[in-house]
Image (cartoon, rainbow, N blue to C red; front, side, top):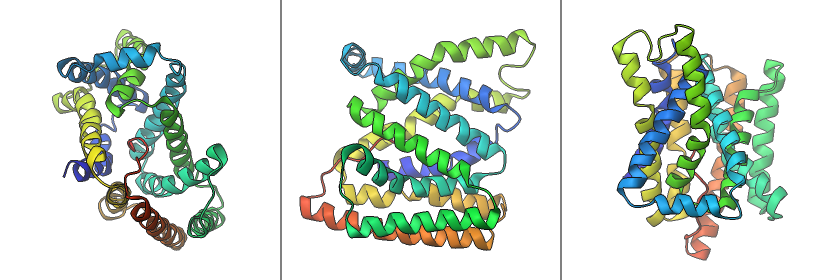
Length: 293
């Protein structure tokens, strides 16, 4: 239930950030960073887990957090901008592509060998993206950028070897001074820091809780569930975004989108089948990468 709640919450993020569309994406990101750092500090202090943060910062891999911070902040900013610019369908496509990007990164960085099913899955996804690019006469850069930035973020975080909550606190804490400085400039220029209405202000203040709570649920689920189970549940998030984009926001879903999504869904079916088969063979206790938002 915790894992399902986490992925469902991430899938509903477009509804939350769309409600803040009167605020600039940079200001939303700044609020998200500040209040996430504050909330996570309370969580870690109340559970006696700050020692993990100190150990990570004093360890040999401390500089990797600068890279992971740059990647996750870029991913967050692009996601917020895309949602508030009417590109929820593109965000859905990006997070459907992400598992296949992870496969390619494993090959490139860890010299992992692709199984035949994985190779076919990656090729099918490439065909889908290429078909969409040809039909629209442009590269689906939003989808690819979201998938690549989060894939690289997962790669960096895998090397850091730290729990999700502690890692996110370090990343938001690194960004917090810049975020506070940016919000201070906005205030000095006369812009209302918390929007023009009380509901908008409440949503901005809640960005920390909204960001951290699904991560805590995810951490609870990933400790006990099999890789095969988590691999299936992860598609709740982009599927929810897809339904919101097409069903609620009425974003254009063309024949090219249909062909692209069909190829990618078929690729993910092959990828998931291969993952289930291999996880069953090794006992299904492999660890997943980091959280998807």
